[in-house]
Amino acid sequence: MTDGARVWGRELLTLALKFGAAAFAGIWNFSVRICGVSFKQNKTFFIETFGCQMNFHDSEKVAGTLVSQGYRQVQSAEEADLIFYNTCSIRDKAEQKVFHRLADFKRLQKQGKKFAVIGCVAQQEGERIFERAPHVSLVAGSASYRSLPEMLVQIERGERVTGLNDRNTSETFETEFTARTNPYRGYITIIEGCDKFCAYCVVPYTRGRERSRTSESVLEEARRIADSGLTEIQLLGQNVNSYCDPLGKRSFAELLSEVGQLPGIRRVRFTTSHPRHFTRDIVEAIDSVQTLCDHVHLPVQSGSSQVLSAMAREYTREQYLERVSWIRAARHKQISMTTDIIVGFPGETVADFEQTLSLLDEVQFDGTFSFKYSPRPNTPAIDMENAIPEEEKTRRLAILNDRQREIQRSNYAKHLGQILEVMVEGIQPARDQVVGRTTQNKTLNFTIPSGMAAPGVGGYAQVRVVRSYPNSLVGEMVRATETSRR
Ligand code: 5AD
Ligand code: SF4
Image 1 (cartoon, rainbow, N blue to C red):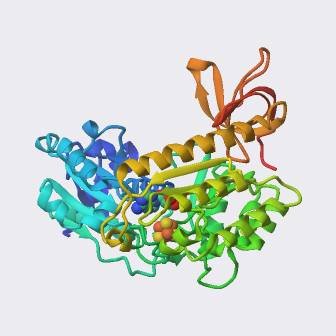
Image 2 (spheres, rainbow, N blue to C red):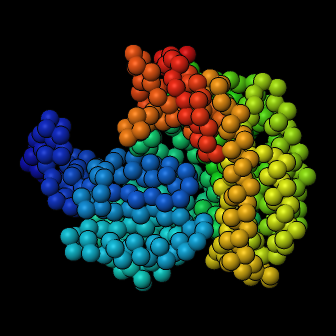
Image 3 (cartoon, rainbow, N blue to C red):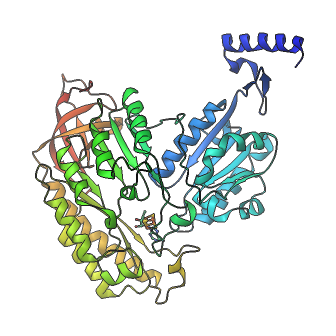
């Protein structure tokens, strides 16, 4: 760079700092490199996300990274220069849905917009996406997000970019730029990927092998979340309790306890746990650290040991029930349990299915997410014999949901008359209700008696339960709880 150019560059840099770099841009691809500082301004992006909480949190990290690179987030594809589509392939005809959506986006290409497909379908379909949707510029799986800044530069140059070969990495995607879009809960990924290879599941193929972050970096992020004013943290992992501190300092239960004891933190949740690694010390931690929420989501998938073995779940019905008995034996807390169930796995007999129903009766879950088995590409179960016809899967699912509904009707009714603490998650103006969540993860919507002020989103209140439904409670606020730091 000549001296003249350097002076001109410095002037521009001063102006940019004075008026905000945004004043210097206007068009996609605008990029000025001054004294090593790159101003890429006014480029906008939109992210559409499908799937699990891990995906939603990945989108927060992707958004934060984009903002750190000079992009601005907007709320619709129409307003955006760069459209990210974060996909999920866990069930159903995920791939077709993605291609339909990409076809919808095609009409926006004429306006110069660019498209990025990320997440599990991106990893699974790979470069086939370019073949079927040539307007796409980037196809990347979650293990490659840490290379996003470089990939963005390539997209800007008009290149086609893939990030598909990083699944065996030992690195995690840590970024201090996470755009926290949830106004009351801070998510922290503590372990990425999954090594379990359940026979029906695509996750090990799409998210790669398990890799944990150091407990120090998790605690540092938790402190940052607390400092930002959020009081609830959720630790995330496809297999959260397989967590293994690379420096060997803390077990999962110890990490959980320490996060719960950070100043300012009032609620800690974690998901999803695998029964195989669900150890007693996790229950002891929940029972002894007041801020750890009274809720465990422990996917069982089936009540039949035969089916569990075919699914390669690595536990039996009896071993699952033993974990339930530890949870039920907690001395200080009544820990609520929820689960995931798959009906119609290949070879599931009527007797197997009845065992799942009897497990529901025995455990009395407060919630189940139940699914018809859906054959997924590349998974061992796709080639298994004795597939269950679709109508039979539908029949079993309906029976299961009916049975569970009655269990929940009675479980939720037990709260009538109780005063429970809720965190406020939003307002339902149409019903004149505030949306709250209990520590047991139950929705408790409530009204505010006249003369009382409603707590804001993220605030806490004591609420008396006056009505119950199979999936939610309704109450009346007794008083707002102190929301300031402990
Ligand atoms: N078919 C049906 N359900 C599935 N799940 C995962 N893979 C499949 C599949 N192929 C369910 C499991 C898991 C939840 C996230 O999704 O119950 O726990
Ligand atoms: Fe999929 Fe099994 Fe891993 Fe859960 S534990 S993500 S169901 S492979």
